[in-house]
Structure formats: C-alpha cells, structure tokens
Length: 347
Image (cartoon, rainbow, N blue to C red; front, side):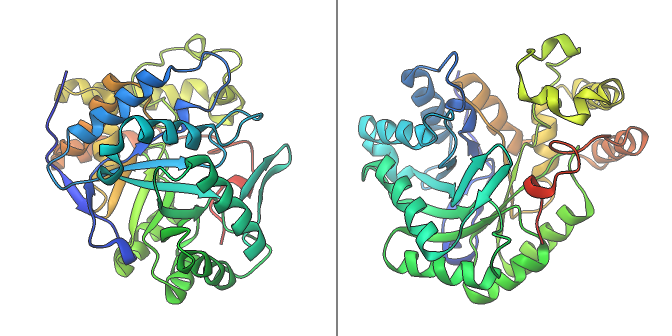
C-alpha cells in the first residue's frame, strides 16, 4: 500500500520558510509502554511510509518527547529515533522533529521546570538520547511553568537556541494570552494543543485564532479523541482493563452518552465513504491553514490512512452534519482525570 499526499502547509515563526505535510506524525504510542513493544523495523516502516508519501521538498513533522517511554526509560522514544536516523540517514533532512521536555512526570502530576538549569538538563538529555543523529528542530516545554513568567521561560529558551541546542522555539498547552506574551519576546514556531470534534472548547478556539494572527502553526494532538472517533470502539469491552483511558470520566461515567456521539460521527463517515479517523482528522485540518492534525501512529497502514485525512475535503453539508452531532451529543466528562488542571491549558 502506498499513497501520494497533496496537501501541505508551512510552519510559523522562525520556521515559516519550511513546508511540511498537513498532518503531523505523533510518535508517543511507538514506545510509551514496556509491555508488547513494537519492533524497530515496524516503527521505522511507519515513519518512512509517511515521509515517502509527501511531495518532493516537503518535510514530515515528527512529534516526540523526553517522556514518551515507560517509567523506567522515559527517553525511549528519542532513543528509537536515534536508531531510525542511524539506519536511515537519508531521512534526516526529510523530517522536522518537535520535542517536548522540561517536564518530569510524577504521581502528583507533571512537574515543569523552565529555569535555565532545568532547560539545560532537559535539552541535553534529549540531545544525548539522539546521539547526534538529528538536531532538534523545535523544542517545547510540555506545559507552561507556573513558577515563572512566560517571558522568563522564553528568554531562557533563546539562550539555549543561540547555543545551538535546537533550531526553533515552541509551546504546548498554553492559553492565547500566554502565546501572545511569549511571541512578543521571541517568535514562536509551533504551539501544541488538544483539538478534536470532542475537544473544541472556547479556550482552544482562542489559541487557534491568536496563532493565526501571529503567524504561528498549531499542532492539534488527539484529533481522534483518544481513539473513540475511529469507529473501532463499540463497547467498554474494547478497552483493555489496564488501559489508562478507563480512568477518564468520559469513559468511567459517561461512556454510553459519548459513544452515541462517536457512533453518529461514524455514521457521517460511512455516508461519505471514509474511515471515521479520516473524517475526524479532516475536521481538525479544516480549522485553518496553520492547523496541523497530530494523530499518533505506530504502523504503516495506520500512518497512511491517517495522513490521507489531510487531503479530505469536507463540504458545508458535512460540517453541518458534524455540528448537529456536537449539539445533540455534547461530550461529557473531562479531557483527563477529573477537574485537574495540571494537565490542561494553563494561563
């Protein structure tokens, strides 16, 4: 199976000269569990398939992090990438690597440290895991550091950028106001936030609008609603007992209501002759030229299917049908675990 993708876009800030595929490739699921690990060959094939499907001169955005590995090996994702680039050096210049860091995951929630010392420690660890195979294109603190003004964080990131640690500066899970303040210190190239048919809150809309005003790209993660908008989940039994999604209030308390929404989206996709995943990705892509859906993919088949969602054109009738589903079945439950804002957009 092979495809040729058509839709491209450009990034923002100091990366506004770079053309990339419309749909970015999230790498988290490739290495985030110690059980049933994927063999390198399978993961490498998935990455190459997406890159090879792009028009000449277009880069594929790859999204990684310093904590996309199991608890005993948080840098596993970047280590996997180092092996990929060593085995496939011709793909170094065909990919645009985004890395989130400056964060330690703890039982109490993510601990963010964007002090100059904290950033040095995190970025050096990321570069160490990559072993010189590829320079980080965008480095992003994974959350806004609540202990210091965003202006200080950006000034610290500029120091590391000027030291040659990475090429461009990004943010993740920030508010529109924070983005504007950060961009005033140094151009921001990419902001990562959750966007899907199930996650399109007022705060999200404001960030997308601010990014458009400033010429900043947006990567919208979890465009498939953590898998619920793929059409593959039919009952609670389709979610393994040890799956983290079972802790979500959307699953634990409102499963039947939210599945009615997912089933209605699936029906629209069937009417259009599409996989539900492509409809959901196309919906995120239609929100703006600067918005890149960011699904996670671990196999060649899933990569090609999801990337093709960026080429899907939604009609006014399609969008109206989706809006009617959202109005009839507004998603219930929190994005993560209860009313815990440590994992949500910060101001």
